[in-house]
Length: 294
Image 1 (cartoon, rainbow, N blue to C red):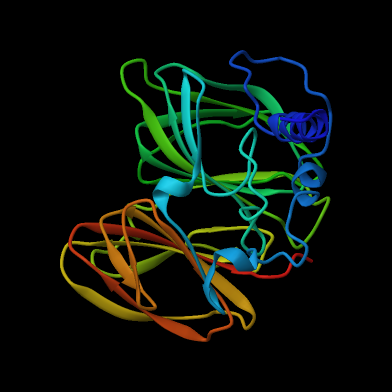
Image 2 (image 1 turned 30 degrees about the vertical axis):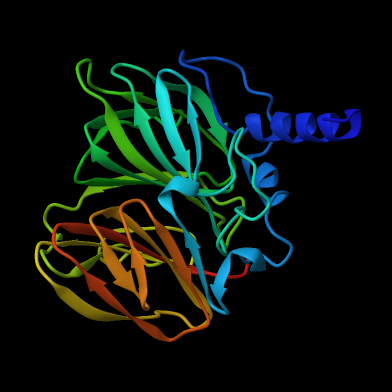
């Protein structure tokens, strides 16, 4: 590698490496840099997936085995989009969806106290339990079957640790750019056990505090579905101009004619609706988001 390319890659790695808090002890100092500006500076020119990854004019496919990955010993993670030391100029964001991390955290380990600002952060545990503490006085354990949301706004500091000493915690952590900056930080979590339905999609997130699920400062709607038999439906876009990023948590499915397997991601936009065919023992997350960052 020539010196010019080495310097360029070193600068990129340093910038992205500062995004992921690797501290495992509470109270470690931060460099104080803004989460929002770190991530905004890395999005694509027009905030859409790079045309090299577009299968047709309005879809993008991210196979599970093409994600960025890292093993920090206590943390194993797969990055759908560029994050920390994973950098791919064709994997920066899908509209306002900036981060989709598939995490596995060792027993009793986790992220020490660290800051965020002006991001909408959603955590969905898939197995185990995650202990949360923040500088707003919140302390909670988020379990499989819960959804957690934080509006970082003007700034929040929090820690996340595996609450169990004898099992891993696995979770999806999702970050969206907000449609309002510098709001008052807020925290919420709910159990979705009472709203989940077999063989249909149920809403877990929206822009409206009075709707089912949690709410965020963004015109986004999230749906989960678990299917134990052949299932066919059409998804209708809630807001014109939005796109949908589908993530196959378990099983297989076909979305808008595209066959998808476990942990594949598939984005579709410039449509009003599309068909979904889920196969047996599938679990699917649909994330409808604006395609332009305001």
